[in-house]
Image (cartoon, rainbow, N blue to C red; front, side, top):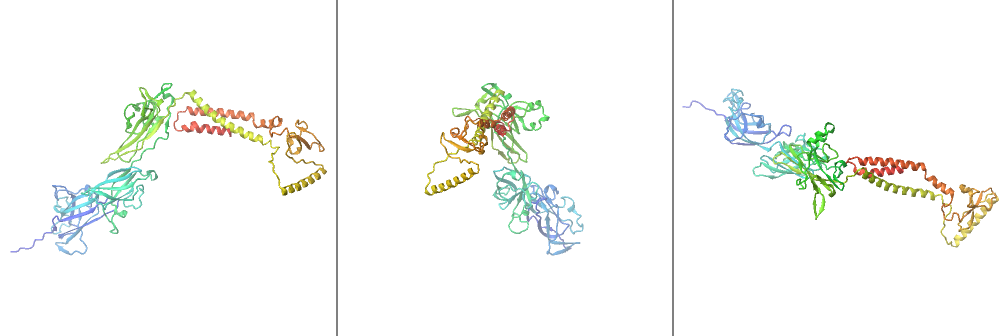
Length: 619
């Protein structure tokens, strides 16, 4: 006979396949609401637990953990709106339930395990679903969280094409990436990382399993304009947060970061393109000068006041001059920034070789080599002796830096090489003085010649007594006008003579002819003792005198003591003495500058300084 009815409640067996998008705290949210059907599903009491889908592990064997990245976990059921609700024991139940994941921070496959708190709901949520994994023995299905793996490292460099290879779960060609600042959220619409050619990049190469996708950000601009060497790579796994428009078009669709993009910055080349070694570091005999090179870690030279010569000597390494270096002509590679010097126990003067930088674990190198030398038989060989490099051939130090980061796969980048020429000059004090004297003397002669030309131009201004008039053949009208002007002038002269003033109009004269001039117009010639003046008449007390044209026929001042006096005044002895003293002081200062071993301003010392001193002397 029938005793009664048995009601079995729970969810359907292993038939559900769910999918969500990875979302990380601090970036755009992506809540995931999922549904399940069954019998007698109770809200707030029944729950599901998500555990990694690992082989040979069943529901009820794994407890929850924060490492799963599912929040919350376990997840309580909710009753969907509009579904019929029935009374099941002391509580209400339904044939469908909803459960919502606020964030799924780890991509991957998860097993969905169900727990019925009690048969009739009498435990009020305090039953088996509160005690770890014991009650979650009913497998509902699987959940796949799609998105990129986190904490990946990427690297690019200015001027190069930036391609990112990203790994994750269920990646597709509809996914996109964008860059934001190192401290900015992925949902922030205005990014400060604007150095990439493309704001958003589409996936262009996805493998069959969806575990790898590649993205092209285009050319990286000059990083110095933005001051950013690190950026977050935000990922959109074909997600549409507002369900408007297309997926991955708004910043709110980028729910998590795939990692960080680091920009490798190369060091600047040394400022000086030439290196003049100090005289005391030059070895060998006259005519066969030689030089040795030593390498010191750059960090050791940052605070020289705290270093002694013994400290520097302890870390100094002699650069080998045989085979080696990336040019195969001597030199070696160092795993840090180095300073090349020509003596042990000091840091200046130097050739610095810096290494590239990146904001991630990496190993950087600087490779020094010796290039150039004497050309023989169309081949370039470095003249290497047992005790150093022979400077007679001329050679250069070449540096090339590179880095390799610790990413998987590793990123490697090489910077452009630089070259510094070793100038074969090793002068003593006598050669320095001779070079400076020749340089200053040559410039001084040019300046003095220019100055003398200016002075003679001023002298010639005093010899403007005669004018040379080109012959002109007048026509009839001009002759009539000239006759009228001559008559007017004659009438005016007769009137002035009648008043007691004789005016002489200068006119062209030939050699030997005598003319009468008004000496009031030339005070310096109003002298009775002038041997070049012949008195013809003196009705107005030497107001007029006759000047010999022959004496001034040449237009110059030869033999005229007054002209010689005017010329002598232009050349002051006091000015000459002061100029000579200043040139001596300037020459002494220049020699001191040449004896300094600084390599920073060689062109200023050798050329700009003497030009400035010469101009200052003339001023």
